[in-house]
Image (cartoon, rainbow, N blue to C red):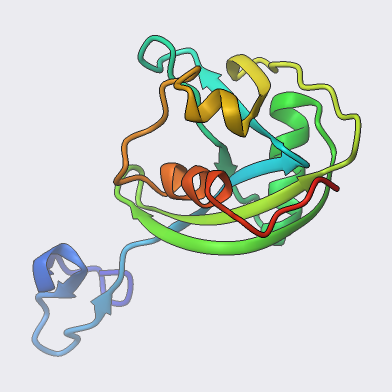
Length: 166
């Protein structure tokens, strides 16, 4: 226990640790680290990356942890720049998904790249490149599982009817 030093026990299915000291009984909640995951697009192209550990042919949205004192939007722009050298001009929150390892919460964003941005894979990626809707719909890349927030971001962008090239 961080209050009295006694041992704690797991409670509420692992969502809390409870002090065993009868005089304390403090509840301690596990830390959750925010991470951003983003679909970057410009016009009819979206930016996907390929991690070195991904199954063959799979590309996904970019992601990374939020640094202490950093806004989510700043984290989106920093991670995209670090991983691909692409500059983001704006981002908008989309949705979130619990990410159990390592105790994270994935915050999904859609981001718009500066026109003419050329993608280059940084040290964390094996590949980073722009895909058109037609390429993705034709199966040019293996996409992440349908249960992932990454796939939801890609699917939303793929099937958006009201988009016009910017």
